[in-house]
Image (cartoon, rainbow, N blue to C red; front, side, top):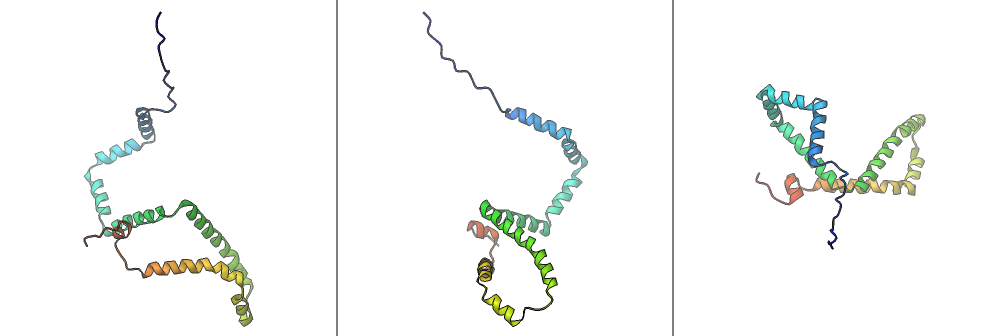
Length: 161
């Protein structure tokens, strides 16, 4: 009597292969005109490349690229939930500016000495200003640090300037 064979059925593919994805991408680039644009740029002549290189080789362009890189690195150190919280707080502050400005226009008289004294005794005001003072203190401390090249600050490696 023959022995029973072990055969496992291979699972059906649910995702395209890399080659199929590449063909789809290539076709999409062709349909939307990106391949034609790339071919025209390559065929045009070396003037386009020369203009791009000269534009990127200027000190202002290099500074802009480095500054964008530093901004991305700094944003990368902030946890998304804290950044979201900060952005929503900034949005709320900006939305409160216009109504407060309009309310100020309605009150033409200065608060006077009594009004200033009541503000100094307002506990809720001081509690709401506490985060602002902490932020200003951290900002001031950072400004007082000696300037150093970004490479040194982020990697600890010194530069050869």
